[in-house]
Image (tube, rainbow, N blue to C red; front, side, top):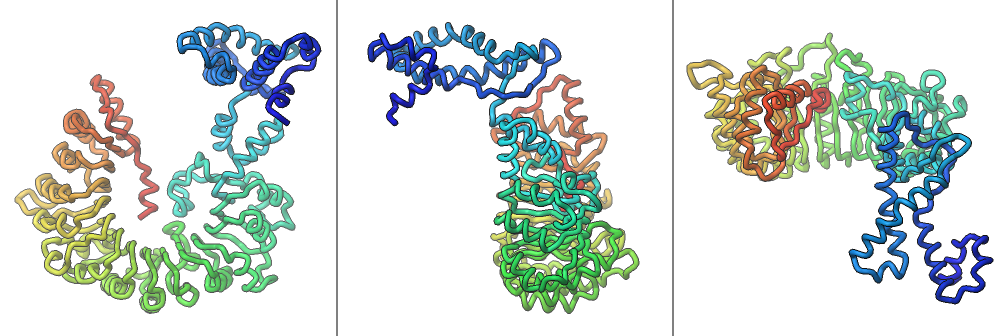
Length: 611
């Protein structure tokens, strides 16, 4: 079919019978007119999309409608050959003249005389943007409204990357946030389907719950599946894996497997052959042999993360290193796991076996009734890790009263290390007596500069100004630094943690040549003065966990004066209450916020869980 015939279909049949006396030029122009008008024609819908209750709401809707219609009208006119031959001024006049008439005519067409309302269709991109934040119950309800919404919901669901069951009622302190600290309800990439499938106890056994299959088939691009306190079967999992071919990450907590013995371990591992990442919270004792047998045979597994779901979690439901000693694949890339005093042999075996590890994070995995971890074990483990796992790029561990020489001689073996997170055991168990002293003056004697290191976190350590003299020299490429709950030994008459010694310590820290992001956590309430803040006026992101009553005034001085000539944008992250106080105080003083400063807020729970 040629272009002329295509355009003729846009001409209503009632008009075609009157054009037989038109010449060819007139007919072509009429076809061109009707073809261009098609670009502004609305798709009719049956439901009221937006119901206004007052004049201001109506004007708001009409304003948004005009914002949408005017670009369409320009596009319509540009498809008319004669319009394109006019000069810019004539185009503008011709565009403005018919707009009111066209809008009026369209309003008549869209008016429902029986219901006495206008139907204003919403742009599909705006609709999708709103719909993607709805929960599963609202989405399924929206599908029943019209075909237009059914198509929008289908598009939104097929773009979801993360699906969860049992995570629908997360409160800010929920231990489930260990899986994902920013597990917020408005995360448009994730959707919780608990409300849609839940009948009794989150039962996901396909034979018990007929709601599962039609729901699972709604998704296509899911990569992560979160399961908490859920019962699931092989048949259900097979449906999920077949429908979601990109699924590669599992997050499980307190789940039960329905009749797991009906299939062999080989059948289970074949079904989960594409799984690359597994994160585990609480794991019931009766499920442990089943899971460890599967983990041992998964061909694509790259990382295992085991999280302590809460401090009072029973030890028999917490995953410790010794549980995985026989099942960890030799080529595992990432391991986040708890350790106990009984895990020395397990760590010895695993560091000899899994030499390709690139990311290792170990933490104390102790129930309240167990004995305190022997102090010297952490230092022995650190030396063993550095000696054997030469491919490490990320390391998080505790160090207790290790000498600067021992630390330097061990860490320098990790030539590819990019991220290092070290800290002493909780002061509530050991006190500050056994905290490591971060002495760069002594370290510099036994190690060359760590040029590969980009991220450094120091938690519960001791230092003093003279011990930080070589901080920038041995860590020249650190871009992101976290300083958390440090103890500053005084070198003056004022005693420990005095303002002057803290300032001198931070002065050495600020000399890091590539520092872009610094985070201050815990214990700095009365130490964050304007003079300290000025040291970090050139970074890109400044995170300060402080709520001192004097801090607001120090911040205002920093923002108004120290950042006055700044060219790059600075993100300033503060506690929510401090952020509100800062904004209110600056408004009361009639001080404008620096346009180069973006003030964000700290999610304290998220940071604590990350540690």
